[in-house]
Image (tube, rainbow, N blue to C red; front, top):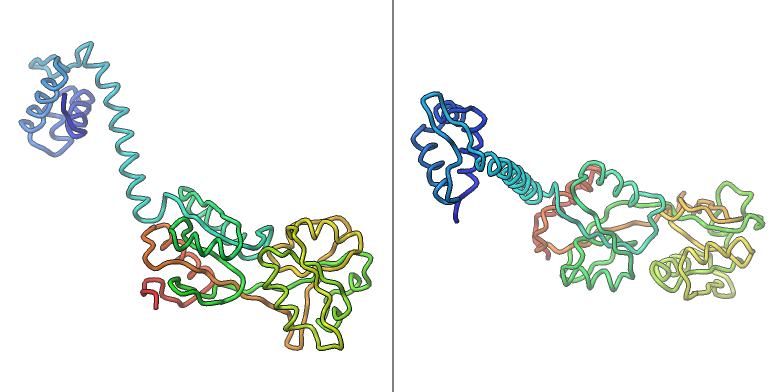
Length: 307
């Protein structure tokens, strides 16, 4: 038994119009083409679908049941074609986005929320892991794009700066600095810093070593095998302070406050960059890059090949 979607469309049109002539007119085809294809369809299914008369055509009892099923087949086929076209244009399908920072606030969260609203048919899967794991995922194609703190070049990947976020200190409400609206790097020279050993702890540590004023002793930085959420949860007990970016400030922890850090030039900022492979053919990635480029008024060309 072999028939095609076109033949089903012809039969449905004939049933709807009650006439091969009127159905052919509605489909803008020759009546002979329509009747010939319906005859082939009837031969394929092994029974007549229509009773023919000078007044037109009416479905047989078996034909009515067949046409009910045919309508579902045609509707599903149309949905499938529309879905494939949308996926090919990046308006459907999936996008795997890697990150190693919090998304409780900040640009990454806002970008993801706006993207989902504008492209509800694209399923975004977020992968949170260390930088090395995310870059390995990019290399194998398991991740489409990674958005990471800093702007380090990695061979084989495109890297473009996306945005910057404020750097803040999270400290106990009992700390005298909690009374300040802003905190300067010089205010933090005698604090004990608790940082996660996992990403982005190493980047934050390097930031501290570069920004804290020189003193007789090295900054008191403790790297812990704990998540940033765990560290923030225990700060209220007065054990120390930690450094976070704006993306982490959407979460509230007991007896902990966030204060923006300023340096000599004003607010302390840290940049975020996107990393992807130019040979990634996922249309949703191209559309996402265009979305980022427009949202943040960027000028990079994501169609050029990796250098």
